[in-house]
Length: 218
Image (cartoon, rainbow, N blue to C red; front, side, top):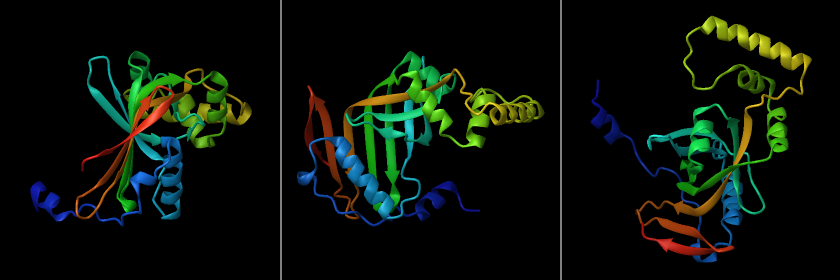
């Protein structure tokens, strides 16, 4: 069996096809560039381009991260996502309402980083989000205490059955702990990798009611 260093050395990097990007022609608002890149990712066949890494910090200052799905970007440029208030991310955001999002689209050698503060969206939006989910997703969300230890698999299976029956009988059921959050960015960076490593980096930094744009060194 090969060692881990040998395995790492055998894996290529920047193996996608760079997408065209001219930073000087980028729009004034990062939301507009994100929508352009997202549409291009879909057209290029990028797998699950709406998947992103949400990074938070716990009460002890230790970083945490998980992959989840982007729910949208508001007209004024806030990135939205959803989950249980009792989950690790919900608890951490309640204590320290700041986070970062990272998108990685290897097929185009692109990534996007979003950093800022997080607030909860009013309850009606959380209700709409939950009811728009499939039955399987709602069943798990209704019956699970996300990230808590699974000490009784059989009991959890029974809880799933009870939750599914409840949703079939009362399809408008929404758990009280379901939340939608929005991340209001302080900065957004768009990274376009290049085979020669002279990567193109464009950073948007909030300035008053607008944005400043800066090119960054590779």
